[in-house]
Image (cartoon, rainbow, N blue to C red; front, side):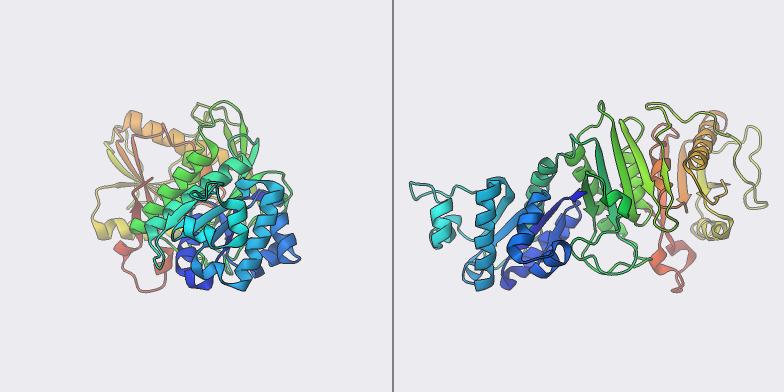
Length: 429
């Protein structure tokens, strides 16, 4: 496994900008190393050996060059190592961020002047991004992260490789430092490139829930990054291995991206029980066949049986276990929404066949409601395992006219929140 990563060489006085860049890199699937200790922990050995080994694993070096960094002894050592690696592996492994005038910074450093200055003395040969000194603007961080990410997508050949790994590293335990994503050992042994998506560099927790505009921006960034990394995936088959732990919206979004109009087959690992579920037996460009269109579970009086010819233009589809039905009903009652509740009872998933049968049932039910009951809009309340959610999402493209995904505010659980506060609509899905 070769995950997309870069070592961020910098002076501590430039850290505000560097930390913003590190966060934006995580949102694009790139693992940033911010200091030598992180790099050493992952790869072992001294700085020179660790950096060289990281480059052999298709990583890159990002140099934040400023007056502060060029005068710092430890950055001088990193810079010297970077120049040696550049000589061995080529210019593509180095990405400079000039904090100030590039010509002035390069001209003022003997080694850089020799290696990076054009013979006419008026131009710098190794171009990168330029920012103003003393600033830490999000727009600069976004621009820098985008450039680094695109270079790594090309370098690791995500579009060309037959296999790829995606890790959604949001929930769980511990900190999101350097190269310790929640990737199972059998995937680490694959000779495949990997993206590790992180919404921030903070501590993991099992109830963190990003919402509102921050979630919208995160999903848009991940979606755009997947498009840039993988391209269209329309002809050559590709196996995509999904792992990690995250709130509903993230694995759902991955499933939508690799839906059945693509040639991608998904293998989804569930960290809670170690099961892997796949849609490899499903034909492309076709809805799942043989689903049970009458798979709903009545729960009178609040969830009655669907009457013959009943008009259901707006439905609240509950894909949850019985223990969570009351939460959804309380939310619907508290918000006075005109959605007819329909429940498809959640089960204990144990294998791919069972999982895909459940997905086929949901698709068949939606098709029936559309055909017989005038279904126009669905609000979907989902409490499915991490490894099941993307396989469902990959099959909803043609299932119903308008599907709205409702996310549970797990971060508000047991904190006295009112029923109407416990769910929100994920608008970008």
